[in-house]
Length: 275
Image (tube, rainbow, N blue to C red; front, side, top):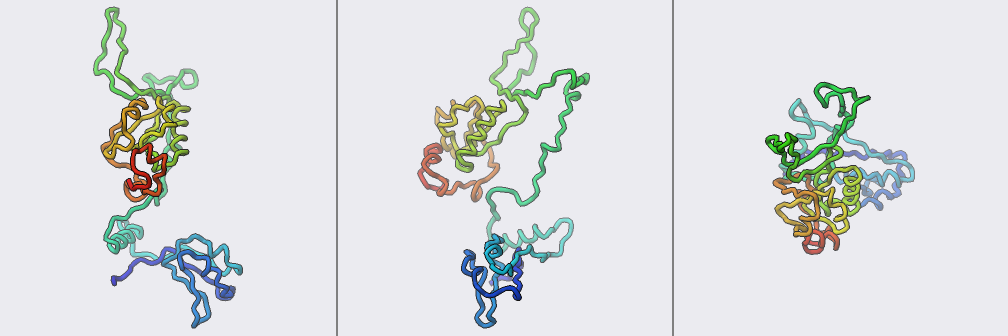
């Protein structure tokens, strides 16, 4: 058996003066962290099993327990932080790629709070935003490479199909199945209300959301989940996915436990089968 260089991330502090060895912590812990040591007559814990759920802390009748984050550390430098070193050890022990589900382990900057829209910089020469109108409307789509005019010298404005956004923001692709029915509906309703677009992702489109088609971008990807003529004609545009972005569950897989009747029908895949 190899050496384990990873110290448990949490430490269980037990006040032995308060502990009455009632064994409540042992009975309620689903992770088998706590156990009673017959020889010493004391409660002990295997901290490597602790997930910091705090159930034992909340149920201890004498408040003898608390869980703290360990201060154990590695020798760091500017390139090799403790987090990076631990990930390398984990990958070496498992022999596999480290995967996580939703969320991010690091602070995610809120870029919108740092954005400044200065209307006077939109035109040349600058205008006074207090007296002159300023629009955020923008268009997506192919534009003519040259200006054409009719016989009277007026500019011909006919262009190929374009998407009009009242605000220059769109919701990125998140498939039905990776997100719930309610979440998908919320995106569709928000896009419709705001005058922008949301993207179905590669999970097809639930029949209930066809009504939001003029604010919908339908996606076609390698899995072709839920792709059929009615689906392709339901949206305002079609996006062809060339690469994977966010990944639900374990790395681009949709667990069969999430594939109920609605998702099965929408994606056109077997019920309760991994995708």
